[in-house]
Length: 534
Ligand code: FAD
Image (cartoon, rainbow, N blue to C red; front, side, top):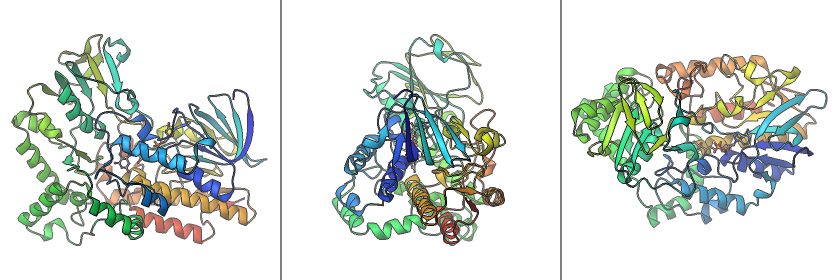
């Protein structure tokens, strides 16, 4: 394809949940669309993250497309929480069923996109040397698709094997008999550590920030559960769309302090036993808005850690104290805390003895050197903006997106950026994105884009561009909503704190997917209010 030129109606970047659905919807409209994907195959997150224990924290029958009732009926999930291979099989089934592959160019990165105000088209360039002009560009590049390495030097010096959870070998890894170091105790670390520790001769976990995690209680789905959901998918999907996080939960009607401590703990115990994230985080009206209310849930979980972990010193190291519960990405696990009761599992507290460097034999902290046969990096992502700022995107007058966002991302609805006409960002910064069941958010964004494009065509417009006042108002609104909650109080990837030098801006809309959807619906109903139609 090197040097080749093409013209299409739309370029879609990324072939995960978002890119696949956008391609399906554009085809339905009769648009010519092509997809570029860095990976050699479809799946996005679920293509790359194949580490042992990789699993979704949203229940399988909620973490799936709703656009095709036939698809819902013919696909049968097997477990309460779907493991990575099953999600990948599902996405492959979707790609085959709707014949999506023929418009996808794999192993090809989009490197640049430039808008021409004269022709009102984008010119997209790829790592394969191809140039494509298109009226619309949809960035379906993912919120957690740019992995981040540790901030200390020398990884290339290490003579053993290095594995990244976010780019795991397809053939799998056998850690039997090996000394393994794992850096990172976010969701990926928490999922993989118990499994790796079950194989390895010796496992050392390097923890910077202890995380709250609840038992997943994963299990096979029963025939009755599957039949019931299949019979009621429509009502369930509607409830998902109108919910806070894309997962329907009963609405709290009391403050944590309107009940006794006993009642509170009974509620938290029921949530703990249920094996789900939402019940504990949404138990009370003030659970994520008031520190004192949040503390009651946080202390309940810390009590569980102290109960499970036999060595009191290790238990204290594992107890999160620097952020409220649910405010840094909370996790679900299988036997995470109990893993630290094993004699051959060790915990290094990087707050006390920070990482200094990698050596040829392993890892040196400020205290000592640790020797390993293999090191696993579960060190997170340059979240939400990373994949967008990695592309050389130039809007009107050649202005670079990275310059526009040098103090943090600004967007209208998390979907569009003023000065970048017809460029859409699926689950982009300042939309609910990572604060939601992302399949719900993805479908809503793709539907919004599809309707907007239909509107432009039907009304004879070439483009739409967010206007700066509407964008400023949205940025202010997102910030105001975030500050109504405890989210901005912690150092998390939600506000860029995990990436040195990244501007500190709360990157997601915390008002809930239902409220957000209503907002978008009103914008569309008012002839795309806040957008200039060109
Ligand atoms: P992705 O799946 O990230 O796909 C984006 C694709 O774009 C990638 O394949 C990437 O290679 C490609 N791409 C990026 N830039 C370029 C470029 N310049 N050129 C070409 N291709 C490019 N969400 C939940 O709702 N619940 C969960 O429990 C949950 N668990 C998760 C666990 C892990 C380990 C991770 C990493 C994420 C998890 N997520 C979860 C978030 C998950 O990313 C989304 O749910 C969903 O898969 C996102 O789909 P997407 O298509 O938007 O992006």
